[in-house]
Image (cartoon, rainbow, N blue to C red; front, side, top):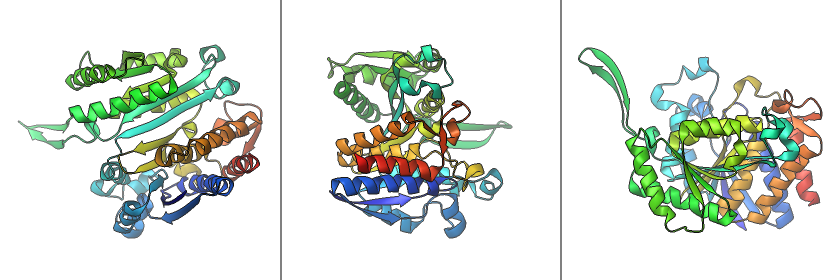
Length: 363
């Protein structure tokens, strides 16, 4: 197939891990005779310092015209970030990217086969046959996109963030989650805070209404605080699909990264009706930028998600996943995993990408 991909490298380790994601995509294109054209745009803190905007108009145009978008993490050291006005911060550019392309469905797979259980800080017996959780996070509603206000009332300062969900927002993400659970023949776990929050009670009501269209899918409700606890006690009970709102999904997916050993093992895809953009879950890690210590798994896995969710290339996507785990199972690790794993050869960012690309070419 032929497609144009917008490439937003971002900040910190972004350019390094993006290079490995593109390296692996090049290996896929060579093996399967695809034609991917990359168009690069500035994005993030570096874009603000060079062009006065974290999401410049030229980059917007590139993304508008592209078939899919690959984005690296954004942000720089605190001292440098403090030089950026609040309304120009790169985090807001990320929210704009999500809103601009209505990418309401966020896919965050947390995978750790039993053969790699040593990566996890949890005891091996808590991991059973391995962790395989697909977190589906609603991405364009909730408190992140609600009205925000700061001020003074009767002499007391206050701040306010509105948490709002509409029926359409909940139903469409619930439908995505049930469809994924059906296609994988797994259980769906809905996570909310329905014992306290009106938005969660509403969310749960719409999820239950949606479930009636999927009688073949087993599902359960779990309160978010209990889910956070249970993820640590027995993560495998959630193997399958987890459905969460925006903020809860943000928090629990980071916890899932800790459970499997590193946020460097957490890719994601943000899917809308017309466009997909993919990005690592983690931050830009400016303290290790340029050292070759960054784990490119998150960016390479994000590329695999783009192939599947953006272009319907599931065979190619599965090959990338197989090769990613194959490198680890071959006795190689990345620097972020070295504290947990006392054996194995540590690969640099580029060396890891090379291994994955070579495995794809060898097929």
